Length: 270
Image (cartoon, rainbow, N blue to C red; front, side, top):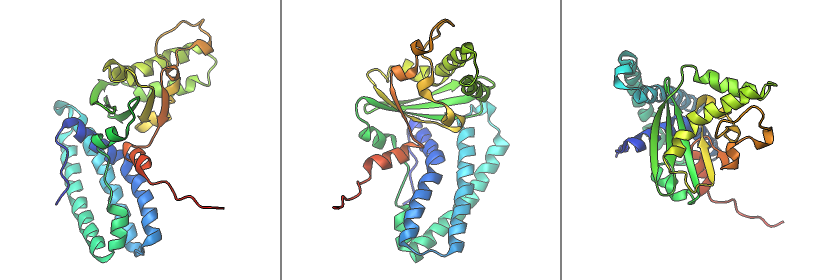
């Protein structure tokens, strides 16, 4: 039976976000484990790797274009990516069927996995912890918020040079002007955190798990400023986000969930 895509828009968005963020790293981890326990010809290893790279790239482009409003979509490019994806997916499926038949041990070790679902993440989240997963598109930022009790997603508009804003914020750590840091630290907070906070879902939350995307992986969220303040404010009195939340980071929800549910290694006696 083939994989059934989720029905709810938020589940579908989360699914594609996770495939984009988790598949290469997680597959690499599983691949390393599988190679230790099963023999696979080098040509099949390379073929599998090449197809996986192509599919991951195309799925990212298709999902990003899917987030764009219909009137702004590049339909020609989208059709080409979908056509290429169909061709590579057929090749990949044929290879996986061969691996399942000829190398069942390798197949079970590597492919008995899937991306995390929102329901699975919720089941693993303590009541006072929330996960925020970001997806960067050309003109919009998508924010998926998950707590033990609820989930939602938001689309916000990005300024024209959002990457420049991030770079300016990062550079402000090195500059001698306090004003730059005050300006960019609060601007980024308004783009990245305020929409999530305004949902009310973070009320009572003490710890955040941030799943960044793209250039956001360079942003220290703890250093964002939760409100504007004057130039004469001393650094120790800045309204840092770390005063409101303990913050942890992860590559993807799938990898985080795998870490939470993995069995601890057996203890050995000295």
